Image (tube, rainbow, N blue to C red; front, side):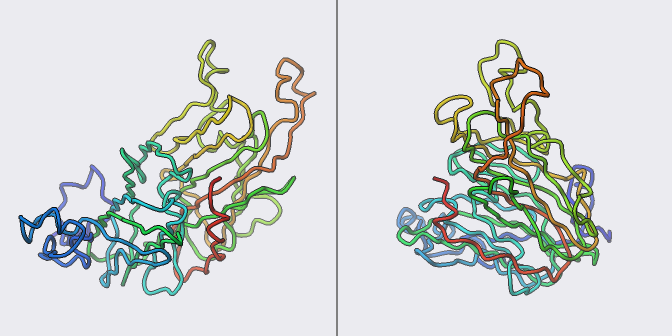
Length: 376
């Protein structure tokens, strides 16, 4: 029989046979055991299904009381998470904290508010169509990051709302298989700086130790000034870097693979819409909130950039930060560029960093109080 372990799935290897075993965890099968799905006799569908009996839609979701944490998955065999689908009712998405633990490590390798993990950190629905994350109508969160582990995997969701119960529908598809020793572990960490200090920075990531590769960024940006806000450079400090980084971008919209302020009203003559949402395989700006005009303050943006063909590899350490930078005289575009000056901004920036690394990994900084996380 073939030695293919069923990992790294793509169109090119779908025809290959493997001894990897397909498993699925949901409210219809909490353990993922084979032949144990659809057996529920109690659940939120018991009333509507009272005339149908066992085997029908009896347990499609679970309730999580205010302040409680629910274990979505607790897997005790080696393998990999291959897909997650989830949707919720009740609390705001930043009151729902998603955590993931690998190989019995006591602290989580993933600790992110639910909406931000799925590129919808501004609470409203935004369509996302990328390779590792999609968000589909009405508010269906999907994740395709491959998450391998040697011994065990645990996924939890915390309801931080003190009053509202959470209703969560979910399905976690995974495989039981042999995992190569050179597979690193999936990590994701949330940070928020509100506001960024004058001439300060937003830190996406620091204190990472081990070997791995940085694979993606999701960021929300609340603008507190008029005018264009995205001149700041993102910088990746790798291994022995100190004052200056190995990788330095050329501007915020450039890093998210856009250009010219995301503004086709300026770039394309006669087009009426400044700021254009887009969602592609590797980068996008699916969220643009326009409260009071094109370049008035309090605009908010949600943006993602996946380093799938170009992972940022580190052998010992990694830290990442970004500048908040605009223009002091944004309206003076007819003048000489040498006469204009940058304006360090004091904006509201949140981020999720996605990376793979070896274990053990360092514990994350404590997640702030729910009131600090709220987008308001």
